[in-house]
Amino acid sequence: MTGSSPSLRAPSWLRQALDQARAAGLPERLPAIYQQLPATTCQRRGDCCGLLPPAAPVEMLLFFDRLKEMSAGGRLALVVGLAQHFVRNAAERLACPWSRSDSCADYANRFFACRAYGLWSPEGYARRSQGAREAQARVARAWAELGVTLDPTVLAPGPDYCRATKYLATAPLDDQVLGELEERLAGLTSGLEAAGELAACGGDLSHLVARITLGPAQCLALKLAYTKAYLAGDHHQVGRVLKQVRLMARDWVLEAIRR
Image (cartoon, rainbow, N blue to C red; front, side, top):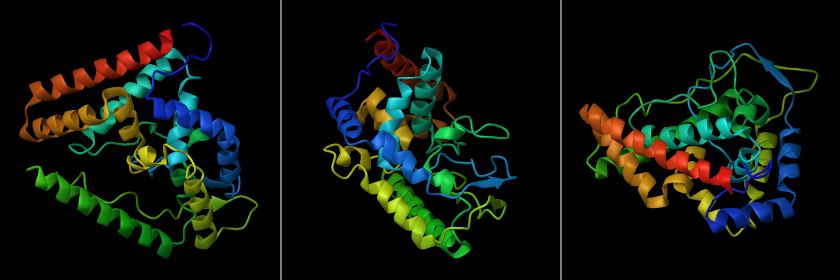
Protein backbone atom coordinates (compact mmCIF):
# COMPACT_ATOMS: atom_id res chain seq x y z
CA MET A 1 0.00 0.00 0.00
CA THR A 2 1.56 3.26 -1.11
CA GLY A 3 0.46 5.81 1.50
CA SER A 4 -2.27 5.94 4.09
CA SER A 5 -5.07 7.09 1.80
CA PRO A 6 -4.95 5.41 -1.62
CA SER A 7 -6.78 6.99 -4.52
CA LEU A 8 -9.59 4.92 -5.93
CA ARG A 9 -9.49 3.58 -9.45
CA ALA A 10 -12.84 5.01 -10.38
CA PRO A 11 -14.59 6.51 -13.40
CA SER A 12 -13.63 10.09 -14.09
CA TRP A 13 -17.13 11.32 -13.22
CA LEU A 14 -16.83 9.87 -9.72
CA ARG A 15 -13.39 11.34 -9.10
CA GLN A 16 -14.62 14.71 -10.30
CA ALA A 17 -17.77 14.46 -8.20
CA LEU A 18 -15.73 13.70 -5.08
CA ASP A 19 -13.51 16.71 -5.75
CA GLN A 20 -16.56 18.92 -6.23
CA ALA A 21 -18.19 17.52 -3.09
CA ARG A 22 -15.15 18.34 -0.99
CA ALA A 23 -14.90 21.82 -2.47
CA ALA A 24 -18.57 22.42 -1.66
CA GLY A 25 -18.10 21.24 1.92
CA LEU A 26 -20.47 18.29 1.57
CA PRO A 27 -18.55 16.11 4.07
CA GLU A 28 -19.42 18.75 6.68
CA ARG A 29 -22.90 19.66 5.44
CA LEU A 30 -24.14 16.08 5.49
CA PRO A 31 -23.58 15.49 9.24
CA ALA A 32 -25.02 18.94 9.92
CA ILE A 33 -28.33 17.68 8.53
CA TYR A 34 -28.09 14.49 10.56
CA GLN A 35 -27.56 16.56 13.70
CA GLN A 36 -30.94 18.21 13.24
CA LEU A 37 -32.65 14.88 13.92
CA PRO A 38 -33.54 14.30 17.56
CA ALA A 39 -31.59 11.87 19.70
CA THR A 40 -33.48 8.63 20.21
CA THR A 41 -33.12 5.15 21.57
CA CYS A 42 -34.77 1.92 20.44
CA GLN A 43 -35.03 -1.52 21.98
CA ARG A 44 -35.65 -3.38 18.71
CA ARG A 45 -31.91 -3.89 18.16
CA GLY A 46 -31.78 -4.21 14.42
CA ASP A 47 -35.24 -5.55 13.68
CA CYS A 48 -35.53 -2.81 11.04
CA CYS A 49 -32.36 -3.91 9.19
CA GLY A 50 -34.10 -6.42 6.97
CA LEU A 51 -33.15 -4.60 3.75
CA LEU A 52 -30.41 -2.30 2.52
CA PRO A 53 -31.96 1.14 3.12
CA PRO A 54 -32.24 3.71 0.35
CA ALA A 55 -29.42 6.25 0.35
CA ALA A 56 -29.42 9.85 -0.79
CA PRO A 57 -27.04 10.65 -3.67
CA VAL A 58 -24.70 12.53 -1.33
CA GLU A 59 -24.58 9.54 1.03
CA MET A 60 -23.65 7.21 -1.82
CA LEU A 61 -21.01 9.62 -3.08
CA LEU A 62 -19.35 10.21 0.28
CA PHE A 63 -19.31 6.47 0.94
CA PHE A 64 -16.33 6.40 -1.41
CA ASP A 65 -14.52 8.98 0.70
CA ARG A 66 -14.98 6.75 3.76
CA LEU A 67 -14.03 3.67 1.78
CA LYS A 68 -10.49 4.80 1.06
CA GLU A 69 -9.87 5.41 4.76
CA MET A 70 -10.73 1.81 5.70
CA SER A 71 -8.27 -1.00 6.24
CA ALA A 72 -7.43 -3.06 3.16
CA GLY A 73 -9.26 -6.08 4.51
CA GLY A 74 -12.33 -4.10 5.52
CA ARG A 75 -12.48 -2.36 2.15
CA LEU A 76 -12.18 -5.67 0.29
CA ALA A 77 -14.94 -7.37 2.28
CA LEU A 78 -17.32 -4.43 2.00
CA VAL A 79 -16.88 -3.77 -1.73
CA VAL A 80 -17.16 -7.45 -2.66
CA GLY A 81 -20.16 -7.82 -0.38
CA LEU A 82 -21.99 -4.82 -1.86
CA ALA A 83 -21.27 -5.86 -5.46
CA GLN A 84 -22.58 -9.35 -4.74
CA HIS A 85 -25.56 -7.89 -2.89
CA PHE A 86 -26.64 -6.05 -6.04
CA VAL A 87 -26.24 -9.12 -8.24
CA ARG A 88 -28.22 -11.28 -5.80
CA ASN A 89 -30.97 -9.00 -4.52
CA ALA A 90 -33.59 -9.69 -7.21
CA ALA A 91 -33.39 -13.43 -6.60
CA GLU A 92 -33.05 -13.43 -2.81
CA ARG A 93 -34.34 -11.25 -0.01
CA LEU A 94 -31.15 -10.03 1.63
CA ALA A 95 -30.59 -8.17 4.87
CA CYS A 96 -28.63 -4.93 4.94
CA PRO A 97 -24.90 -5.73 4.57
CA TRP A 98 -24.21 -3.79 7.78
CA SER A 99 -26.81 -5.75 9.76
CA ARG A 100 -25.57 -7.74 12.72
CA SER A 101 -27.51 -9.89 15.17
CA ASP A 102 -28.25 -7.02 17.54
CA SER A 103 -26.88 -3.85 15.99
CA CYS A 104 -25.55 -1.97 12.95
CA ALA A 105 -21.90 -2.59 12.06
CA ASP A 106 -21.45 1.04 10.97
CA TYR A 107 -23.93 2.83 13.19
CA ALA A 108 -22.10 6.16 13.24
CA ASN A 109 -22.32 6.41 9.43
CA ARG A 110 -25.85 5.06 8.99
CA PHE A 111 -28.00 6.67 6.29
CA PHE A 112 -30.71 9.27 6.80
CA ALA A 113 -33.35 6.61 6.13
CA CYS A 114 -32.06 4.63 9.11
CA ARG A 115 -31.87 7.70 11.33
CA ALA A 116 -35.39 8.83 10.42
CA TYR A 117 -36.99 5.39 10.74
CA GLY A 118 -39.27 5.55 13.75
CA LEU A 119 -39.53 9.35 13.55
CA TRP A 120 -42.26 9.55 10.91
CA SER A 121 -45.85 9.58 12.04
CA PRO A 122 -47.81 6.35 11.43
CA GLU A 123 -49.68 8.10 8.60
CA GLY A 124 -46.49 9.46 7.06
CA TYR A 125 -44.78 6.10 7.23
CA ALA A 126 -47.82 4.44 5.66
CA ARG A 127 -47.62 6.83 2.70
CA ARG A 128 -43.92 6.10 2.26
CA SER A 129 -44.55 2.36 2.48
CA GLN A 130 -47.19 2.63 -0.21
CA GLY A 131 -44.74 4.42 -2.47
CA ALA A 132 -42.19 1.67 -1.87
CA ARG A 133 -44.75 -1.01 -2.77
CA GLU A 134 -45.58 0.81 -6.00
CA ALA A 135 -41.87 0.96 -6.85
CA GLN A 136 -41.54 -2.77 -6.19
CA ALA A 137 -44.47 -3.44 -8.51
CA ARG A 138 -42.69 -1.51 -11.27
CA VAL A 139 -39.56 -3.58 -10.65
CA ALA A 140 -41.58 -6.79 -10.91
CA ARG A 141 -43.07 -5.66 -14.24
CA ALA A 142 -39.63 -4.82 -15.60
CA TRP A 143 -38.36 -8.29 -14.71
CA ALA A 144 -41.47 -9.87 -16.23
CA GLU A 145 -40.61 -8.18 -19.52
CA LEU A 146 -37.31 -10.09 -19.36
CA GLY A 147 -39.19 -13.35 -18.85
CA VAL A 148 -38.42 -13.55 -15.12
CA THR A 149 -41.05 -13.91 -12.40
CA LEU A 150 -39.59 -12.79 -9.09
CA ASP A 151 -40.25 -14.67 -5.87
CA PRO A 152 -42.93 -12.88 -3.81
CA THR A 153 -40.64 -12.85 -0.77
CA VAL A 154 -38.27 -10.53 -2.63
CA LEU A 155 -41.11 -8.10 -3.26
CA ALA A 156 -42.49 -8.20 0.28
CA PRO A 157 -42.84 -4.82 2.04
CA GLY A 158 -40.06 -3.35 4.15
CA PRO A 159 -40.09 -3.17 7.96
CA ASP A 160 -43.29 -2.40 9.80
CA TYR A 161 -43.86 0.94 11.46
CA CYS A 162 -41.65 1.26 14.54
CA ARG A 163 -43.34 2.05 17.83
CA ALA A 164 -40.27 1.31 19.94
CA THR A 165 -38.40 4.57 19.26
CA LYS A 166 -38.05 6.78 22.33
CA TYR A 167 -36.94 10.43 22.23
CA LEU A 168 -34.13 11.60 24.50
CA ALA A 169 -34.54 15.13 25.90
CA THR A 170 -35.93 16.62 22.68
CA ALA A 171 -39.39 16.93 21.21
CA PRO A 172 -40.43 14.82 18.20
CA LEU A 173 -40.17 16.27 14.72
CA ASP A 174 -43.28 16.37 12.56
CA ASP A 175 -43.44 14.89 9.06
CA GLN A 176 -43.11 18.28 7.40
CA VAL A 177 -39.79 19.03 9.10
CA LEU A 178 -38.50 15.53 8.36
CA GLY A 179 -39.53 15.92 4.73
CA GLU A 180 -37.76 19.27 4.49
CA LEU A 181 -34.56 17.75 5.88
CA GLU A 182 -34.84 14.90 3.39
CA GLU A 183 -35.26 17.40 0.55
CA ARG A 184 -32.22 19.36 1.70
CA LEU A 185 -30.25 16.13 1.78
CA ALA A 186 -31.32 15.26 -1.76
CA GLY A 187 -30.41 18.74 -2.96
CA LEU A 188 -26.81 18.65 -1.77
CA THR A 189 -25.64 17.03 -5.01
CA SER A 190 -27.95 18.92 -7.36
CA GLY A 191 -25.13 21.15 -8.60
CA LEU A 192 -22.71 18.32 -9.33
CA GLU A 193 -22.15 17.23 -12.91
CA ALA A 194 -22.47 13.63 -11.70
CA ALA A 195 -25.97 14.16 -10.27
CA GLY A 196 -27.52 12.11 -13.09
CA GLU A 197 -25.10 9.23 -12.61
CA LEU A 198 -25.90 9.07 -8.90
CA ALA A 199 -29.64 9.36 -9.46
CA ALA A 200 -29.53 6.49 -11.96
CA CYS A 201 -28.87 4.07 -9.09
CA GLY A 202 -32.22 4.84 -7.49
CA GLY A 203 -30.83 5.19 -3.98
CA ASP A 204 -29.26 1.71 -4.10
CA LEU A 205 -25.64 1.94 -2.93
CA SER A 206 -25.01 -1.66 -3.96
CA HIS A 207 -25.98 -0.71 -7.53
CA LEU A 208 -23.48 2.15 -7.57
CA VAL A 209 -20.72 -0.09 -6.21
CA ALA A 210 -21.55 -2.76 -8.80
CA ARG A 211 -21.60 -0.20 -11.65
CA ILE A 212 -18.14 1.00 -10.67
CA THR A 213 -16.49 -2.33 -9.92
CA LEU A 214 -18.15 -4.48 -12.59
CA GLY A 215 -19.12 -1.89 -15.22
CA PRO A 216 -22.56 -0.37 -15.95
CA ALA A 217 -23.59 -2.97 -18.52
CA GLN A 218 -21.78 -5.95 -17.01
CA CYS A 219 -23.33 -5.54 -13.57
CA LEU A 220 -26.82 -5.76 -15.10
CA ALA A 221 -25.86 -8.74 -17.26
CA LEU A 222 -24.46 -10.57 -14.24
CA LYS A 223 -27.56 -9.73 -12.19
CA LEU A 224 -29.81 -11.16 -14.90
CA ALA A 225 -27.66 -14.29 -15.24
CA TYR A 226 -27.62 -14.84 -11.49
CA THR A 227 -31.35 -14.29 -11.07
CA LYS A 228 -32.27 -16.70 -13.85
CA ALA A 229 -29.84 -19.33 -12.57
CA TYR A 230 -30.99 -19.02 -8.97
CA LEU A 231 -34.68 -19.26 -9.82
CA ALA A 232 -33.98 -22.25 -12.08
CA GLY A 233 -32.04 -24.02 -9.33
CA ASP A 234 -28.83 -24.01 -11.39
CA HIS A 235 -26.40 -24.01 -8.47
CA HIS A 236 -23.35 -24.41 -10.70
CA GLN A 237 -24.14 -21.24 -12.65
CA VAL A 238 -25.01 -19.39 -9.44
CA GLY A 239 -21.57 -20.21 -8.09
CA ARG A 240 -19.86 -19.21 -11.34
CA VAL A 241 -21.55 -15.80 -11.40
CA LEU A 242 -20.75 -15.07 -7.75
CA LYS A 243 -17.14 -16.09 -8.27
CA GLN A 244 -16.85 -13.77 -11.27
CA VAL A 245 -18.33 -10.88 -9.28
CA ARG A 246 -16.01 -11.60 -6.37
CA LEU A 247 -12.92 -11.66 -8.56
CA MET A 248 -13.84 -8.48 -10.46
CA ALA A 249 -14.67 -6.55 -7.29
CA ARG A 250 -11.52 -7.87 -5.59
CA ASP A 251 -9.36 -6.76 -8.51
CA TRP A 252 -10.89 -3.27 -8.29
CA VAL A 253 -10.05 -3.04 -4.59
CA LEU A 254 -6.51 -4.39 -5.02
CA GLU A 255 -5.86 -1.89 -7.79
CA ALA A 256 -7.11 0.88 -5.53
CA ILE A 257 -4.66 -0.22 -2.82
CA ARG A 258 -1.71 -0.27 -5.23
CA ARG A 259 -2.35 3.24 -6.52
